[in-house]
Image 1: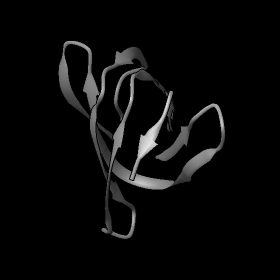
Image 2: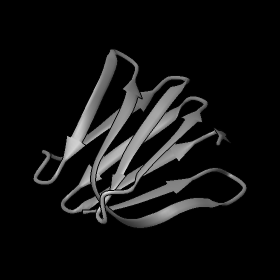
Image 3: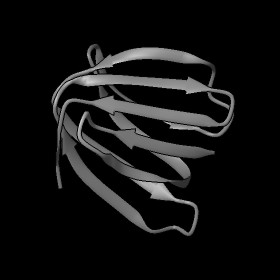
Length: 82
């Protein structure tokens, strides 16, 4: 599946992943291949990404939203602290 991470200023990441863990407003959850379509609000916290090549990437976000639709995961956040 593909992940895109966007802030109002720029695109932070766009590429293939195997999983992403996000800080949802009701608790942290993980998105894997085949996840049901969802839109959820996000709170400030840590995002953990495992890229398709196995490399791990972590960064902190300010509040925002996540949308999962088919094979695309979009994180729309107010800011990122790498």
